[in-house]
Image 1 (cartoon, rainbow, N blue to C red):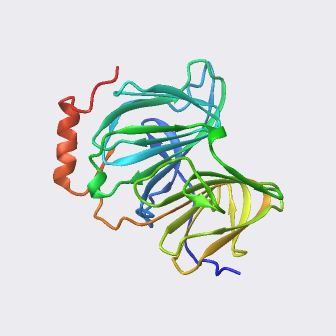
Image 2 (cartoon, rainbow, N blue to C red):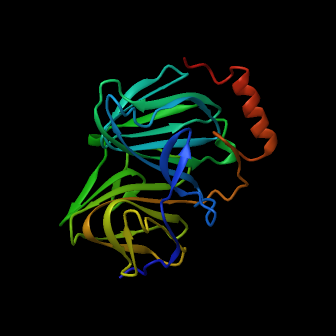
Image 3 (cartoon, rainbow, N blue to C red):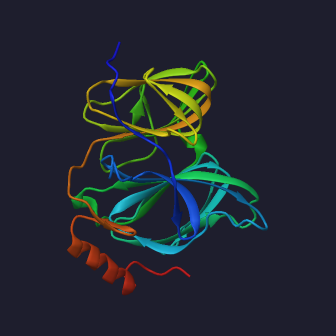
Length: 283
């Protein structure tokens, strides 16, 4: 039996105001700045309809990292200054490499009415790749392999699990899994020894390593020490979890708003390039 990792940090998922939108932000917090290479995790859930526009963001730039959208419910429209435009449906993932810079816009699709729920994750890029050419990986739910066991379904987005590989290519080693468990569903997930690791609960109630219980609105995020080979999960109620592990980049991070670079000078250059239109335009 593989040795279970000890839990390093237990976190809530408190609301923050982002441009007038209330969203949950379990990472970063005052206690944890990042779980290298994962810099930020936003969890949003909105009812969308004639009198409730949902989460809608005006055009904004990105540089130096990868903003990733996991859509769990609803539909979400995205478009950018490179001319890309499309709609994510429930279960789809958009893995965007901002690289040298792109202007991006996202929000509910025009005709959608209902609940829109998703996660945006910021994944850092190593210094040598921060100015890479921007690109998208739009991955549909039916392109992702699923491992199914009794009362457990694990969708593999990036990385590898039990010989199955996810469709997303990454610049550093990253595992990204979505686990759906029915009540009493159990699973053990092996984790590479050199990876940082976090587990985030979107819904339900789940026991981790038979030590701590994740519960919506209370404890929702766990990070782990690099002292074991696996984690064990058991659902007290029907649950959905995002499981992320990655090889740490271990470089200085300097960020301001939508830019993530290695120095303040590079941040100033990003601001200048955006103002001069070098990241393109989106109207």
